[in-house]
Length: 161
Image 1 (tube, rainbow, N blue to C red):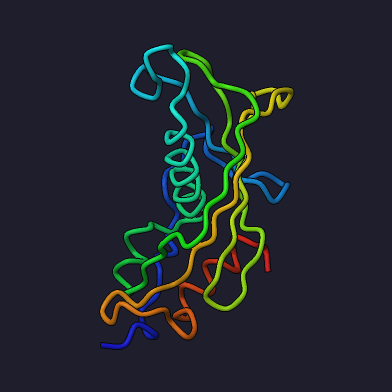
Image 2 (spheres, helix red, strand yellow; image 1 turned 120 degrees about the horizontal axis):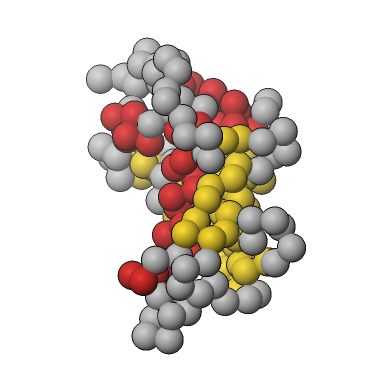
């Protein structure tokens, strides 16, 4: 079965007014810190930030009408091959923030995303991060030589190309 002929859905999806791509290259994803995000001191556990980075990337795709499950159906997996985070200031239980993500670079099947988690008013910076994904053929379990055309078109759309 070839994935080249398959296309991602193009119909409009229902969007929350809080989940939107801005005129800047950043996509904003709102965060509320709940008890299960924190340690016993009420401070966000470091791994929670990584979950928010992932959620924001998937929501960014959804904001342009692409369901991550559709990428998987095309036989394309996007595992993380590099991850770097820097924690600037702790988030605490009950706080609200914005995870901002953007695709910084795309070279072949390698995609680099940047993330910032900051206060809603943009005055406090809590975390910065960078994640690199590669496209893997789910059936063969090997890195793809090139992205399927529908997947490449989706990522170009995110980057505004």
